[in-house]
Image (cartoon, rainbow, N blue to C red; front, side, top):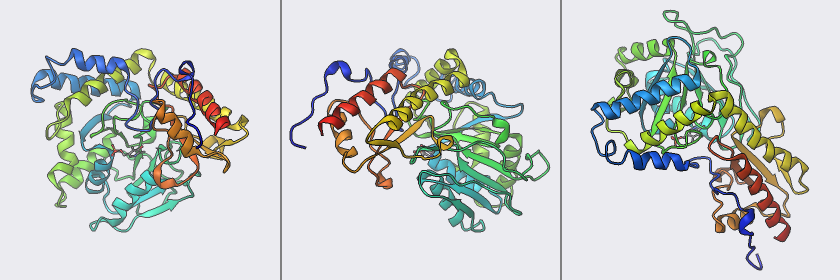
Amino acid sequence: MSRPISIPHHMLPADGRFGAGPSKVREDQVGALARQGRNLLGTSHRQAPVKDLVGRIRTGLADFLQIPDGYEILLGLGGATTFWDAAAFGLVKEHAQHATFGEFGAKFAAVTDRAPFLSPSTIHSSEAGTRAEVVAEDGVDVYAWPHNETSTGVMAPVKRPDGVDRAEVGTDGALILVDATSAAGGASVDLSETDVYYFSPQKNFASDGGLWLGAFSPAAIERIEQLGNSGRWIPDSLALTAAVENSRKNQTLNTPGLAGLVMLEDQVRWLNEQGGMAWAAARTKQSSDLVYSWAQASAYATPFVTRPEDRSTVVATVDFDDAVDAAAIAATLRAHGVVDVEPYRKLGRNQLRIATFTAVEPDDVAALLACIDLIAEQL
Ligand SMILES: *Cc1c(COP(=O)(O)O)cnc(C)c1O
């Protein structure tokens, strides 16, 4: 870079946070923190005020996700990564099958594959930017894939695979586990196609990390009870039986971060007030469509995900021609307070990754794209 590029202030997005998690927190959520500062922060999580807060999160999420009868919202500490370990202990009986098409899906597959008390997992994987699928297989008791692969910007349908019947209580059927960490809160889903739809709060729910939440089917809860009482050694902090027991009392096994719960509750309420899942999905589609149509029309940028039906509505990835250095664009944006559009580090591409989560204003996405054009012309 010869001379630093300057972006006129009026062109900049009103909010410059486009990261894929931690992601933009709305000002009202921070306001909620200030409002709850005296009466809730710094008080016991075993008393009514915090338990009621957790209760509002659980019922708010049940509304938002339109959970089928009998499904329950459970939560625990540690985020989606910790949930993978908990799931290997408490949901996989013997043999898991995974579809992996990026870092996050692959990480969960590695957990079940290496667990010494399970048989090696079946793993269907595909190149970054494309999508693999699970297929019906005898002996598999858990099928798993991410709804949205945050590392590549590929989105997958949430649908029970052909030949895999719905798991009913008492029938020992295979469970469907969907990693919705970056999809939930910003994408539509029919939860009856899943048994566990789990996520962390720092993506579309615009809160802090450190927590996992999920909608669990009756069959999933039955499996948790079965494995919890099977004699398998399960560390206490990863025991899903404890998550069931505590969540039903609007608690967690050990102490949660209260600030994250306050911001999460505010976001869930906001999402429901705005129009719920359909509204959120339409808004992220509007924002991501701006990115993809801009990239398609651009002389130097192209959507990374070639199949339009695989393109994520919540995390848009764009490749740049060799002549345009995406890292230099990201650095210039960062110098102007527009941050976290760098690609997933291990992907190693000349790329930008733009989270179009529900909290992000579509107008800010449009402003970001104009800024990228301005920088690219001057590089
Ligand atoms: C961010 C992310 C994770 C990891 O979440 P943590 O809360 O950091 O454990 C897992 N899966 C997907 C799809 C993600 O986007």
